[in-house]
Every structure is written in structure tokens, then in C-alpha cells.
Image (cartoon, rainbow, N blue to C red; front, side, top):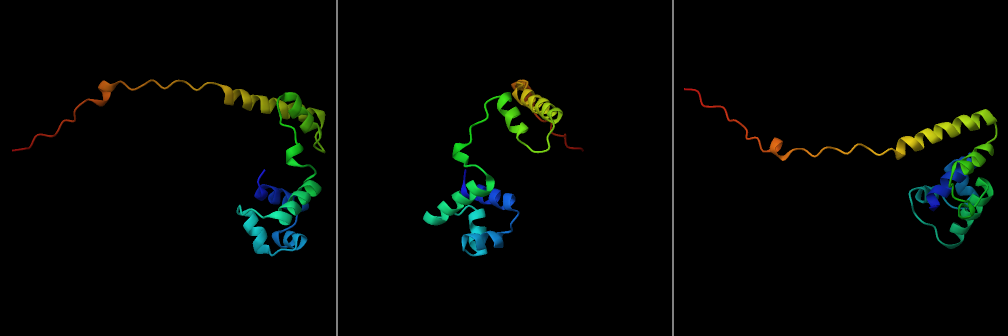
Length: 128
């Protein structure tokens, strides 16, 4: 995960603005803006962002297991506060529907007959 993504997630998790985050990292607001624009901080700044990410977002992206199947999705949905079992089931069915729609093979387009393209244009005859 890139630093700009981590900074965005920290902002979202803390509900801070760029200025407040800048104060937390002891940098200027314009530095935070540069990070959000893709600039890569070095050394201790990068380490501080990674530590803040682990602290505020709650996990390190490197330790997050990939989602492999519907059971993994169900486990993740069950961790969301406020979702009832019926909500989890409904969300899983929606996700499965999207998976099926996206995995359907698109129809093969019929190649255009070359003779259709070779029809000469008729020029109007000059009037006398």
C-alpha cells in the first residue's frame, strides 16, 4: 500500500484534517498535501506514517490476509459493527451476483464482412 493511501486512511480513521495531521507528524500542512499527492517521505517520516497507520487504522496492510473466497468475505462482514446476520447474508448474495455478472463471458463480436467495407461511394453526376 502506498503512503498516500495510508495517509488518507489515517485521516478517515481519525477524522482529522490535513492541518491536524501535520501537527501530529510535526510537519507543515503542505507536506501532508504532498504526501497525499504521491510524494514519498523518507526515513523517520515514513516510519511515523506506518506507525500511525497501524495505530489508527488498526492493522498493518502487510499482515492483512488476502480475501480468497466467500467465507473470508463473510468473516470480514461479520466484524462490521451494526451488521446483523441477515445483513451479512444479503450483502454476500449481492457480492456473489456481481461476481457472476463479471465472470460471464462477453459475446464474441462478429467480425465485419470485408465486403461491407469495400462498397464504393457513388458520386453525384453533374447536372447539365
